[in-house]
Image: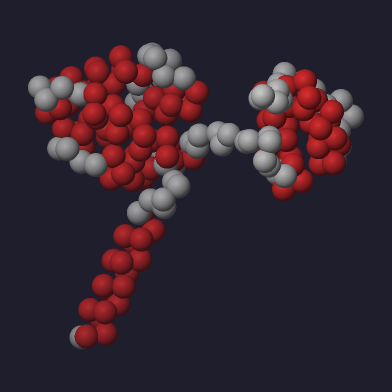
Length: 171
């Protein structure tokens, strides 16, 4: 009997740990939900329909990854589907943003795949340690191309050539 109870407890703990968010997971979701929840008035916080309406107007000004998050939830006019109820109900219960994002992740995994782009400090970073994807992003941000670049060293060489043009030394 004790063994069975122990196995059940371990299984519950395992399921809870699998569904719990890791620290760097769902960063866009948590930030947007938290900011949105903070923007709601006390009157609006308890009404799910009002929350959904406010979220749609809140999403109109968002850009980048946050706009994509709104698209996934159905907060934009061009959204293909909508799971706003999965946001509005927990918000009306004052559920924390982390828990709401855990629930949203169960409905649509790509919500937690959204990550903010990391800023790269070209003055201190070792280009050799960056991934090719990051090197391409640097060139793309500068609106530059790397024709004929096949290997990582080609991208690094091109960035080093262009650094003086885009990196101004401050006096």
